[in-house]
Length: 309
Image (cartoon, rainbow, N blue to C red):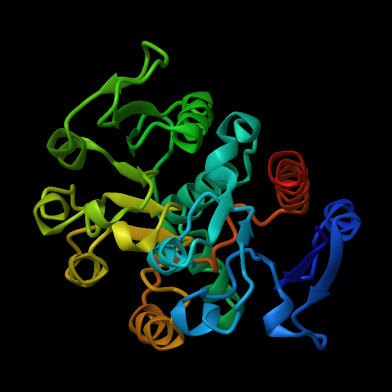
């Protein structure tokens, strides 16, 4: 059987992966004419929300291929009810162990928050003066970082953090094989004692607002929180109140809750746009050319070998 593929985001997409799909049938892109009824496979990243209203147009849809680890952009329940198979990087964990892009961004956000880099840059260019007295900060070395989740990305962040002299404590609900230098602690202990807290857990229905009011109230006054996981795992409203009232030092996130909902996105960004100790990047953690192309080729090859007979 030849398949009709629909690629939603063509920009930067691996030509090698595109060639694999073309060898299995015909590949269409979302910016060109195509028949909704004929599409068997949708290929997506994170820019589209594949909800019921979107997916119901595709009567022949059998597969959704997403070279991502998170699936908050896909209506999983609708897919299950309609026998649509979702293929993601969750099925290829061993193959993606060395992808460092999100861990690199996490470290960058830690430095940017700690040294007030964006605040200093924006102030200096806006006011056309040098006034370093506004931007006194602390050395990273010797501080304590608390990692919530020590999976693939958490371990990389731990490795990077160790290299720059941070003390590492972590929480993970599962047993983890790791360095003896890293100390496993309770959530309560981490939120009470860490100077920096970095979030690295998957989002599920069970951990919605996992980082809640009780935990956030425990934070040190100057604690910095970094989130490159999913916005839904932290109570953003409570967090903002803590920052506004100067009970938490700052927040840097590559994700926000309901980020594919334009109204929710604008509402949140309007609340934080004038806060110099909040940094928001537009979900660029895995968005490097090397990471994109590697995962796109990996999942295309996996689809060909696993699902084509």
